[in-house]
Length: 143
Figure 1 (tube, helix red, strand yellow):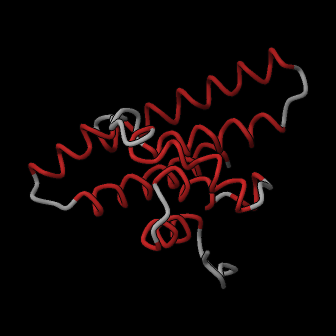
Figure 2 (cartoon, helix red, strand yellow; figure 1 turned 45 degrees about the horizontal axis):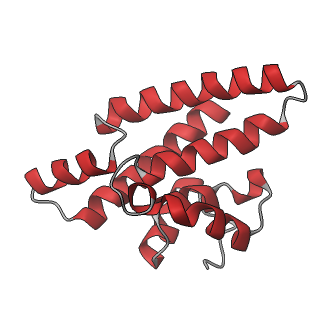
Figure 3 (cartoon, helix red, strand yellow; figure 1 turned 90 degrees about the horizontal axis):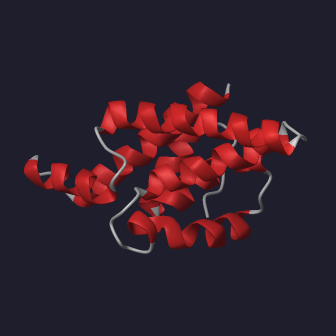
């Protein structure tokens, strides 16, 4: 796991985690560990099945899944009333999904990888960009 993360932005941290070998969902969730207060091992384990478009099924992008986890944890902690909590989480989740789609044109792992293939870009770069974009969007909507 990355050491010396004190002066790094969340975006830099997420990209560093991703290029160290963590999956998309793990990298996004780990970048927000100071706000989610999850210990790194738990974050890695919780997010692991969501890498590769949920269990390597190429469905929902792992960066999106990780982002939704972050929203649920951070927004959820700010509201005690369950109905209010669920409403605000849905609103923030929808905002996140729409902004991600505006940047990536999709929330589908498979579609992101197809676009990379058309651009003659390797999958690792496309996924790294999705991680970066997810973290930047989270920073916008959670601050």
